[in-house]
Length: 365
Picture 1 (cartoon, rainbow, N blue to C red):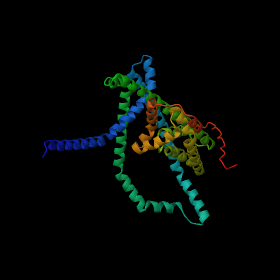
Picture 2 (cartoon, rainbow, N blue to C red):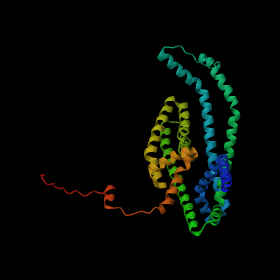
Picture 3 (cartoon, helix red, strand yellow):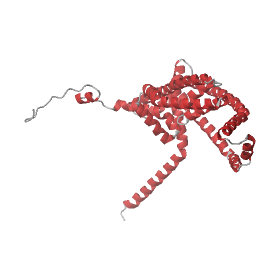
Picture 4 (cartoon, helix red, strand yellow):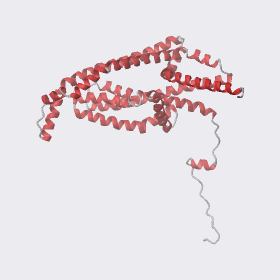
């Protein structure tokens, strides 16, 4: 046996063991890494406000705390307002549900010449096996729901703490990162950081504009239909549909439909139709233009980045995909060498090409 063969075998086994250990550790820490990524982009989003307050003489930690406090108060007030509104509407709907059910049963009896009664339907539902199984499954799933809620609160606290430290210690973090890099790399890191702050702010600006347009459009419809709490519902639709990716549109449209149903069941269908139509307008007209202008990427690239981010990280990936791709595109754009277009390429871009000269071949007139 050659002398190098045992060492090579031991080295290969050690490399395989290190790879397995690293893969296991990565899968165990992927949740924490995703939380840190969310916190980093959240810190980039509030960086302009914190830097502006810090430039006026305020301590950076205090400025970050005030920004977080303002965001928390606004979010808490919005949730409390919608919660009280939703609770009142649910109570009204439960109290008026027997009248809705009687109206539906009367219309069915008139149309199909049946003899249904509300008491018979209620009795059959109360003694059905499906309802008993559903109640048993709901009772066993209470612990799972509680664990999910506690896990979500812990994740929210983790993201908040990391984002606070990233924003409060931003300059110190940049200095610590640049201190281990050569001077040429330091300038590149600082430029990438500034681009990330600008692109993330532009993305939030575009989302804010779309939320404003969506809220105004839905408020007009709710006011025309005389739906209660039209301003609050418009704010709900605008914020939820823009800042909760993938399922935000459905969550945003469900609450106005529920409130409209308490007024008239047909109004719920009207609201559903408008939500669907406006969503198509936003997806194909409004969102590509605003996203391309504020984040400076092509609409097709923005759409593809959202799909890729959703496939990789789910809702979190869809939310941070566009600013991440915009930052990467702007940073790598400085290293792409561009050349002057030739005459044929300019014609391909839309310039009027020259007329080709007619050539007469021998033997042809």
